[in-house]
Image 1 (cartoon, one colour):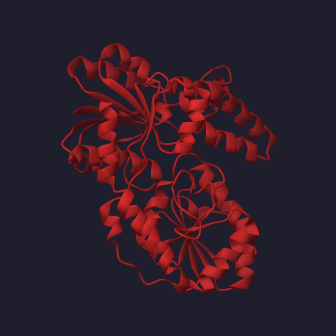
Image 2 (tube, helix red, strand yellow; image 1 turned 90 degrees about the horizontal axis):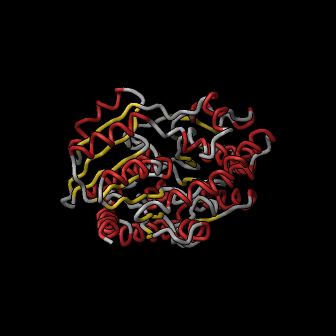
Length: 394
């Protein structure tokens, strides 16, 4: 098959779940003998240094467009029916690219990543008879709903609520314009179909690369915890601050030499209470993040806002890392508490679980082995790519 894949960002380097999901769909679908043309937004020419990486798997096209928030755009959006988080991804440059592309190319499938790019379906539909599918990496309105409900600032809460109300109409309606909508979890599929029963859905989870399953353990620092995730994404930032404010003080009280390593963009700038500063180390961006994670005894996923599936939880289980997560953090994955990981939502219970794991770390080996086996048996990326091929042909 010949496939045009359209994404809202250049999915490299592989430093967050969004990029990992987009890149590995392209990589593994191409490895199965399909020809992939790839189009994505970029904000500068620095991405050209990844040319060799992309040329292994696709013919790439990077379209200049800045998707960062700006005050003028926010103000203008008050009068728009399209949510701001979606509207800012609409661009004349992408539309012009698509018009030119379909004048010179025929494809079997157009694969669109993320609802932010769903607007392109109206541009593409008159230009081709190809099947057009949307990959919902997250059900975005669910993230916004959790975000506004958790806000204490009344102005931000009101703005987020109004955006959520727009999303309630926009996202399900846009999903219905596609020939197929590939959801990432059963929970997201159920919620979408309640809002728009006409959407043709199928479920395909994310995968894990074989190389991760073969990684060997690193020497682990005693009484060490890690948090992996860029603080550019608000749910990561909010979840981490909840942990530092509500959970970590109790851990420090019981294990004074405990260390919490923060791995990911902007973690080096996080503000930590004075009494915890010796226990929290912000490392910022780390080139080999998973290697650094494996040097800690356990990893926390304290998310309270989200949708879809956390890609990093697949990777963490695949490398045999012990995980303590909130229910939101493991949402959409068929894992069991105390069998593949630990799940805690109450701050006191979260802290108690960490203390117990750190003080009795040698007893947790069976849990990490079962988690790794689950990833190996059900979630290899080659298997997932085969599921995408089937969805394209349906």
